[in-house]
Length: 268
Image (cartoon, rainbow, N blue to C red; front, side, top):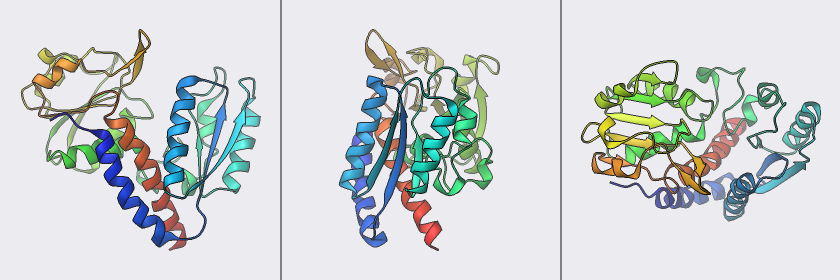
């Protein structure tokens, strides 16, 4: 089963539109963008387009590539004060302490769940990519509890939050990074969630028949976006997400689900 992430996201937006009506009032999502980058611009346009369809006002601050860390944090605080949640759009320019910037986002407005000073247990919402992986697995009929699961990569966007969330749902999770584990670990996995950003390095011979393969790794090669898994892995997988068009659209929809969850918790 090749997952159609756009179809799942569309289904989510229909449900979110109903929630939006019930929430009522004005809802604002802030975003701080530093520098100009075609890929970042594409991500931001996608968020803005879906905000419009959900009647969510986007409050955007654009800073130059030369902005200092202090200026970025000040912009985050300013936009956050005028919004129900705020996103520091990643990546940030070289030389910026990302942890310091992310730490400036309060828990009750951290729609991306990236503040490193907050433990996973204490977050009000969880990382959109990790939530998207779980959504796809559940819609694909994959049993998470008790599943032998390998998370590839330990990054802040995919690996770390996915490891925690899958463990909390009862999966038996191991981690594979350059420093830990082996690609041979993939051969016993019922579920693989990959966010390494290494184009096509997972091959069919690394997989067992019927694995659920969630490819959240994105990287550019020869001006095309590629995932961590070679497309031929579909011959082995029972569930597989393509790149692009798999996890990405669902993760963006999860940002708005998180926004509405934060609002409901604040109002209660």
